[in-house]
View 1 (cartoon, rainbow over the protein chains, first blue to last red):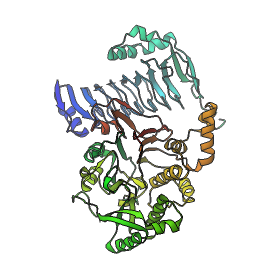
View 2: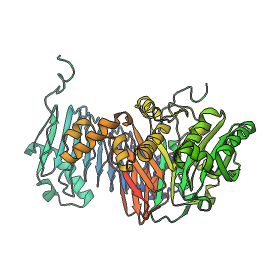
View 3: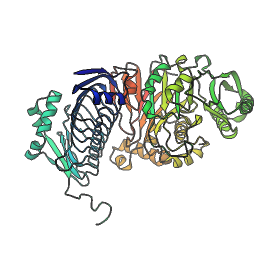
View 4: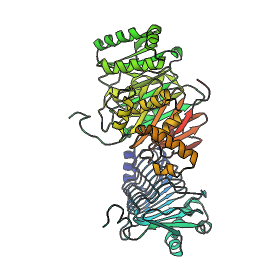
Length: 239
Length: 361
């Protein structure tokens, strides 16, 4: 494994090292807010010790970015593939317009996580949130899967205006308190087919967060999904 | 084409911290913090405000003034002489750097209203000072008082904030509370007066965002004697806080609940006490509601406030360590000066974080 001290490196310099380094495993220590780390990355396994800056992991194609610490805004923006692990909390707009790949956040995420996630064919993005989510979770979600694990067992792990304008994909929330339905979005208890769908990602999250899979997956959970194919067709005009 | 005639979209950086026990910290720390967010600015404005820096003149208003030339300076000093007792005047000391150019004349005056003038004006001391400052800024072309509080001061320029801090030798000042701004002007020109913070008496405001309600806010606040003539939206926020807190007598919490009042549907869902409170504020002060994206840090002699717009369309992170509270656009700006905070969190939209000094002023 190649190790670099990033304290005096810019985000651009970090990415140049990632591109040129022959060793596929690279660790950067002393990272504090450098932006765009691992943007557009392919195949490498990068560990960041510190705070990953805005839009780290954006356009990532494959490989893995692990952050030991917190991350700032727009992590995994328009990500295509690969995996991102954040041990701490994330800022706003985590997984913004994700098109593929997986993001696992150990703790809370800020506002607008998973905003406008989308899927096509085999490309299906997944965002797993260990803690709680800020307002506007899954705003305009068009596809993909968001899981709120709520490891701390918060009474209400969703903020306000969750799933606003959601028209595709699925949000699974582990909570004892059933979220209220929203215009165009229905809420139901989790079913066996949902468990099957989330199993792979929940197992991976539990391994990452050192949790027991069977006790997490057996908790009460609810599913939020759009009502039908065009839930808002009468919202503005009667067409 | 000049900057200001063309729209450059982006964001700014804000950072601030307060030692609630009033321990003094020199300016190098806040420079280190704001420098960490260099990429959020474009070199067209940087500035700082510091509290507790003039203990030897703490009973005098410290006027920081930009002049275009020495004729304007003479004219302004004539005005100051007529209205104030000037106990000290000097150039604000600067350190020449190639990164800061085209500086105006930058002067500092420690003043007290002349007792006879004050008595005949029938105003209190603060209102008298504010009136004089607006008079200079509106009628003496080429003179701009950009800071007029007691035992505090603003320092601002066109440039990157870390260079502005170096230019003003902020490492030589010691304050208990500091705020900083790196500017990336979007809709308004980058000029020395347009750099943040915007100050009136002890209030200093730094702002990341843009106010959609600017014109409604400006029209309302100008009815109370404030003049918005600095070609930027942020000055309106400073005047709104001065109006609500100093003139109306609101607490800073109440003033925050005016500028970032909850949506009507959220108010209707509250219990009666909260519903009555927010209904009262929205009905009576609706034109001072600020819409559009913002993250703000507001400094005053008694504390520091951080607040986002209701929808949280800009970023803000808060941290605490012992007696010190930190607020910044990005977590890295806090970790650059406090690597091991006790707690780090992102406040919710519209919910102010209010840090106050721990004993009376």
